[in-house]
Image (cartoon, rainbow, N blue to C red):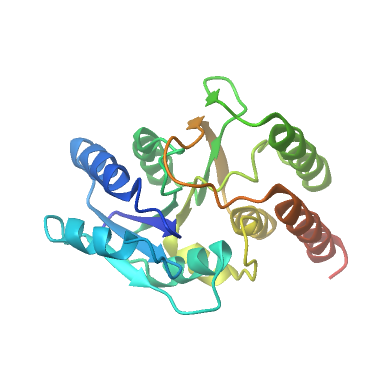
Length: 236
């Protein structure tokens, strides 16, 4: 078993995937971490899959999982978790909006006994560059609601840049298909009384490729998830 499995979900990321993989693997090597990187691809038609296969020739720890329909960010994450071989499973964005320098601190928290390590963009020591205003407002509304309803100090539940103890997250259960999957996994782990901690991270809007995040659709899904988690916590 390797130390860390990094899951990168992709959909037409040919413009950035080689740079992302080069940066990520360099950071993991410099941190002396044993790793595998799972590129979970949702039917890209722009050369993303071939770019990953080409990169894997120089680093076989980079592995392509070419998915079949139905597609969806959350479905990709759930499949990546199921196939991860690492002690710790890390979810990241393929466009490097998440900084891989923070994987090492996540690993250190894991070694201290934590089951979930949340990358927070909104705590002391965090740094956020070019975060859209409307997206930020919706983000804070959702996260403050989670903090209040579930009595937690975790202030960035919606951030998908998280790390999970693989043996626990594989059995926790989740059915989200969209970007809300990371929030669902964390809340379920929280309700199961697993040890959760957050660390400050940096976030920067993508500089290449096209964003797949659609605010209107995602807002509806986060609201539905919030109601579902309230039911799970208080009405079961």
